[in-house]
Length: 171
Image (cartoon, rainbow, N blue to C red; front, top):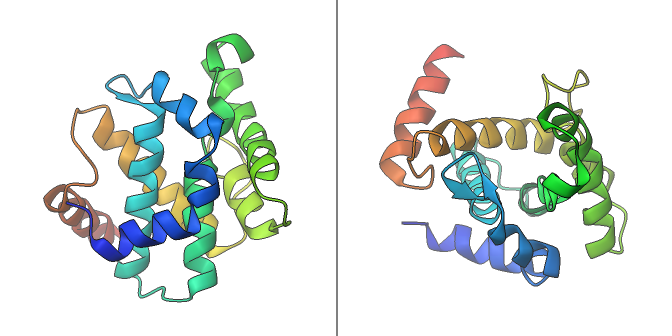
């Protein structure tokens, strides 16, 4: 179950993305073998906001940025089989394409969101993000990917709490 305040933040901060054609199309594309790209994006947004809660990140602007970056981070991948010759090219190009999708949905410039989207493939992409939004996005994206390929839902609280405890024990 998803916490009410997280659902409200996703609906409020992510309304432009959620209502976009590219987001709706993302549900037609398989991602991480067992899920759709659209559901992966939702998973990442939920896990990102849960990480904000765990790390006591309460600043509304940062939470908005993280929500928008999470919802846009893989939208550049929509149509990947037509756009990219192989997985390696996709891994390296989709973050930049995701920034272009963000710019097409939002008129205001937001360098923190753009940096988070552009750098979310670190360490595959060699340059790390420079803001907290990017580090939260990287962590939540990797958590979700690991869970999704195992046919587990990263938004189920029991799984999230267990993974969080493991990650933080290693820190």
